[in-house]
Length: 304
Image (tube, rainbow, N blue to C red; front, side, top):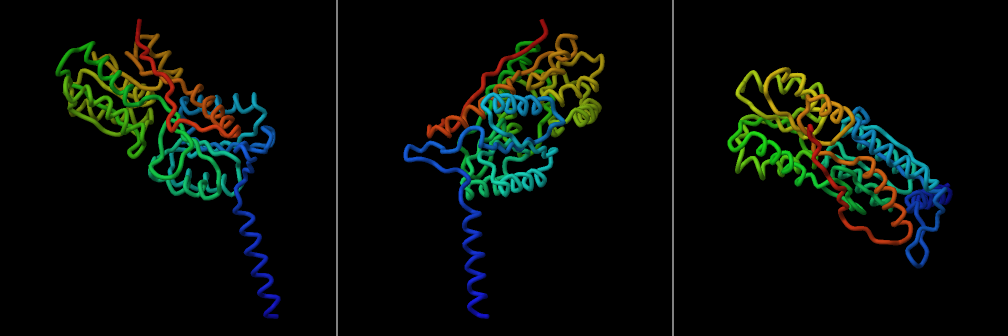
């Protein structure tokens, strides 16, 4: 009986060790031995309730289909705990590569480290992760974009203009970086009299802006860390003479600019981010090294 128990425990240990092996096999040149058609990419998106991240997802799916690769997409719904669980599930399913658009840059660090332990390469999109090994981080230059928004307001309204700032999700790298870039201009040339998180959400943008304008009716401009909050801010502003600047360049924002409501947006190219992530996976499969960061160009879109 004792020998049987030892044998069973030994088999459990062997099977556990096998299950922990990396899903990727490589040849002597560092190239992945799997065919593209055998590769599955796990994708964790912060929220599909935002057109920007839908565009990222579509960019990934389009390029993956072109390459003949399979994709599994999960939606964190802006819940960092759900995203951690989603990533753990993808790791357990032994996806070959993992693309993550973090809800919170700190909260998912342990999940990225779990993928590292399983030998699954991780690529982050739009927002970085605080801990864990990442093959590459693909994003716009959020700091530069924040500066672009600040300079637009400065050029339009001049020095010491009273400005409100709608911040994104606390803890997200995009929130930190866009705010940092904006304040590189604002702290020297503008007067930021109010700032508050509206969590990258349109309804929150409306509510927060209403509260800010009640407390500070002399605000002349609003810089928003994304378009969804900016579109909410426009509803709160109504016919008041207040400039609103967003960030992302999503379809609703572009339509709002054309209709003369939104004054400007720092436009990203989310579909290109998605495409670049799959192209990066192809390079990894070929044994090539990636730059730690890949920057996708930005442009300021404004009313004609």
